[in-house]
Image (cartoon, rainbow, N blue to C red; front, side, top):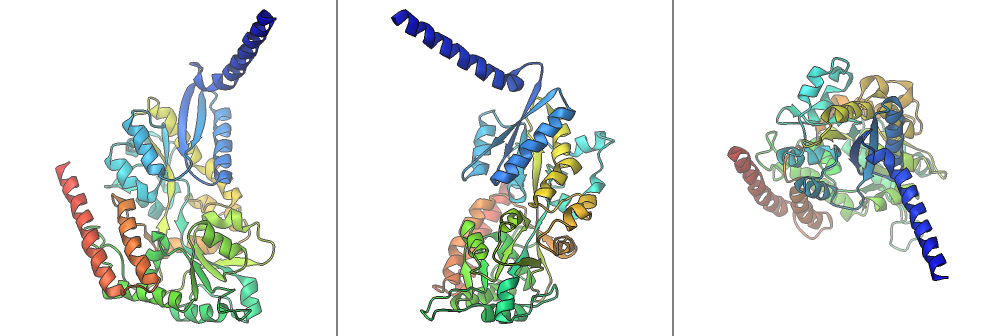
Length: 429
């Protein structure tokens, strides 16, 4: 009986080994070149990325793509740990703000030589403004799979019920303020606002910087050598937003809380980027659309991007480049475009019906128009540290605890120290 049980166990283990071998052999068979691709994103973006990988494999039977979603927080830290341990993925997903840290630490291969050697690849297919974001110290380190600009999403149904006219692409801060007040309501009279005019994540630099730039202010000077948040124009923008919060016209929601507030019909407006569209398309109870951000002294919004770079230590640089230009190229971007989550960085796709007629929203041209007046996301090292210090201080202003003038002076002192350290490190290299 014991012998029979032992044989059964041996047989079971053998079956498991055969199954595992069968499932894994494509990725560990020496007949194939295996490329590991790191990615972060929502589940539907990850699934489409896997579909892109399978399509690539069909066209390139000698290469296997292993998509590795890195979940949780601290994506950048995890990538740096893998790189320091000598085991980075071959292809690295990265966002605009992570480029300086990745490039300065020697994690990424410069793509300039790949571009020069590849006669079939043409950088002119991409929006030049977006390619500039993919450069660090004038060298190209990743290909953009999309671009992002902050626009205003608005609940058309709430506007209609409140008798408020829809915003136009030429609206102003004054008009925005008037609409927000009319759209903020305490419906049941309990002193709590049941309907909010505007929900915003003011701790997100994309939104915060857009407001500051419209006022003629900024967090940094153009060379990123000095913090300029203490200028009159910057403080004016911060005080304007703080006033809206004090008057209960803004709900300060970050991440999921912001999206949920808008999707449940509790907020009339929300400033966000294109990536929220697949979620918003599940809305059944009201109609929504997009419009450009309101302007003040300037009409401006933030331009950002994300995409893929090649690990400096990959053993298969040519194959990695082949997949890189595929997933960030027309075939990869077309699939993501159909999902609705991106504004393509390739001009021909962005300006085609594939994107423009992908509804809702109805006015997809709003995203494309932002290319003309958008401003690059600040590209500098120690982004997370800088943002933590800025947001910790500014949050006290937005909730009415502290004065903007004093806080902005404190921020300047702390940020200037970090920027000075960045410059000293660069001089030593």
